[in-house]
Length: 258
Image (tube, rainbow, N blue to C red; front, side):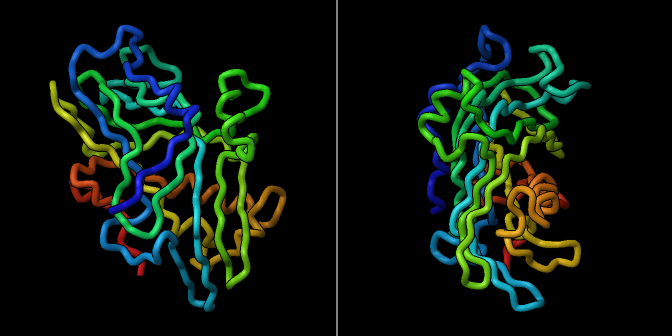
């Protein structure tokens, strides 16, 4: 079974168990939020993931951590983003910041958190990838618990052709991922939403060749390439059986890595 996604103590303290409406949801409907990096049954190496290319390069990823905040579900009828819309247009799942320690190697989705929401149909999930700051009062507890993540939103540890690396980024991006078909949550029912992070494409160039993550740190040659890849390789879908695959067989379903 995939190991649980780790959330910081500071994140749990700031989980918002109500929707965007301060009065809270009026039903017992619930959403389970999970994270995956590979579908169930994908090849893994213990708690790591390994990738190769046509030039005999080998990338081994041992750990991936992301800082997310303001995770919202957007109603089907909403016409603007949750950041700009009224309380009736979205449901808040998590205020954050939260530190997600992604599940590697085993495949399938690992449960992150569960929240009650108002029953309805939701056409998108929105969130921010954003570094915490010493100067931001709401972030203070998070930074105290995770001092290495002050000013950092993404960290990856591993080896490239046998040489160890640590990749860090201060990427700040607002993400809106369409849910097709929409996630429908019925009265007194539970829905399961999985965020898929396709690590296989993070450190590749346009030709599909692996790039050394050490060359993608801030100010270096591949920094913009990798940050763009990160933003382009996030998917979200209904995943009731937690296998890391879209229950409705979406075209963007990730495939098991060879």
